[in-house]
Image (cartoon, rainbow, N blue to C red; front, side, top):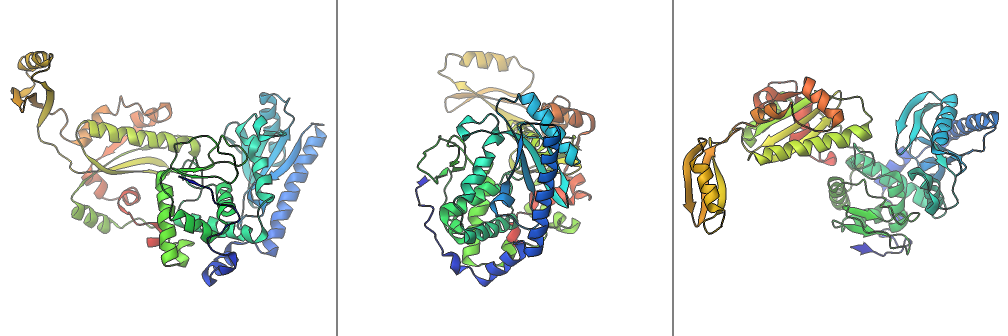
Length: 462
């Protein structure tokens, strides 16, 4: 469903901010002292990089991008500094030279998006120094990050000073309700996406008013460019690159949470939407009581977390989570819910309708009129694994056989050594993976893992 609302139209005038919203804004907007510190950190980092570029006599330049460049940052923002190289620079030289320059001015951790960049700290602020190509148009992009300076220019050229504060409010709201961050761990809204939404709907309240009416597949544009067709839950066509969905990282879960948060906040605004109470693991007694009342069966797979970046580990672990749920379903164990939790270990916890199935399994055969029906009858009459011989019911053949796995823990334990969840997870699972049954989970020591599954409260409900 495409919304063709003019970016200038708002659902709520910015002058209509409530006292609550003004108070929140005062807490999250950098004051004069904080802004001077941010400006000094940016200036000194950029000066150090330019000095290294000059020292090596390179044809490269620096550019500040991201929220600081656009004036939409909160307290303690990240510094996003790009080093732009001429398009004729080889990819290998861009990576090696860019990282060398970055390491010359900052100690940090090499991270990888489409290509490596350096993450570290400078004067107390987190920093990403990213090598990129200097291009004349986003249509000429050579790497995915090359369009980022155009994103910065697009927002800076359109956002008003009051709207910068509207972005800050929306960012803090999204952080509070748990939907902010496009990283694989969070699957939420990026800072650039927040800025575009404010440009589209005019204000913090305008975005919430629009979000209340979003439907799955919602399609939003800011320009006349129609863009590509996408299948994600939320589609926001990048005004800089119409072939990209800015909201591609947003999962259906995060979109749904924002929709509900918008409904609840507009109905009854409260500080807890911006600054929720900290979520604490349920106590041992609470978990045991909750599990008893639910009458379901709990089990988990736990294994040491491999040394991978979050953007690699989380997608692989989620894929493993879905794979195990599928295997359980194939053997008739009905999965009610499952959850993934990662710290030093990876924990995948499942809630099942039951921890035991009957010995008998009815296996469906073909209709009696089917030409292959006699093959089915002959096969199972000769089998020793049947509980009863093949029989007809309402014109179709069936046979009752001995169920291979009656308990989900035994099923998962038996397939653990051959379970293929990806090269980075297979080793830790096969070497140190543990399958925990209902009693072990509720016996203590697994409160955080169980709470991730059983505590269904939304952040503002805590």
